[in-house]
Length: 195
Image (tube, rainbow, N blue to C red; front, top):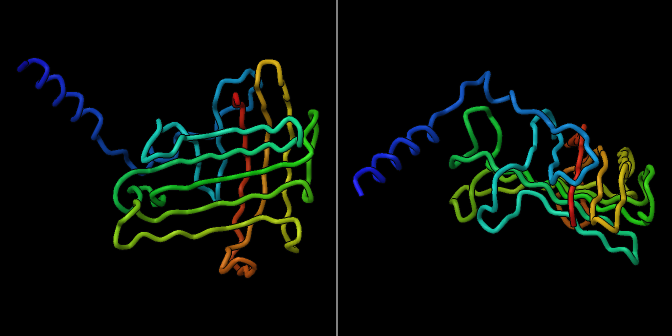
């Protein structure tokens, strides 16, 4: 029993080591692949979102839904950075990126009118006294924004969808009210997921 306790303490010490500022930005967005490797990522205003954390607090790191009859592709990416207010690299506690593309029945590029997207930035964990969410949305009816999704593989037999994406979004103040002075840029988005 003592050996297990020692091993647990060694593992805990190893895992609790903090990164330096230089190490914070070494992990980039994964390569764009088309093999169903279950990876995804993007860059949100310079912060890499690369869902690698296993199921945490009820959230899967990434998720893909494909409705074959309607051609709707729904992608959700969530990255958590730990701590109570984010990490020493200046990242928030969590970033959620959600993207829906419609009329996807084959590979190709989809723009503006067939895309809806949301970015939610969470400053603190749930139930924290200073918990704050900032939501940014892309909708085709909002002027001054652009969005693009390219499906590079749509394999309904093996249940794999792969692609790349980017979009801009305004901060949402209320259901139909947006702060157009607060724009967020999501670039280098990739996904290679099974559904």
